[in-house]
Length: 148
Image (tube, rainbow, N blue to C red; front, side, top):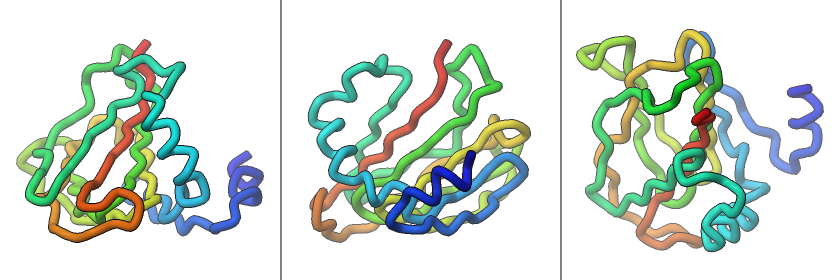
């Protein structure tokens, strides 16, 4: 099933394993950037507000290490889509005190984590300045998760 999905893409994503149950798919969302931008403007009709979190970052903004624990079902993975300015994604461990690995996320990168990685601490380092052709001086992160 995964091969079929990748076969339909104009851009071949480059998967990178972060840990058991966690992958970084470089460029995966790029072929869909215009549809994602239109969905952003429409407010992701059909999704409940907690099923798709929309985080907007401007230069200097950050998100400290945290776990996604608001869901009632930890069996479903988290899917995180990066749009706009690049960011440094912090991939920690099972404890907040674990030193995180750092991954540069570019426009269109997708991170998926579940299973043994579902409750790993993660965050975003302070966003550097810059200008993105579609989003200007912003980064938008879409986080999809199963809430019920």
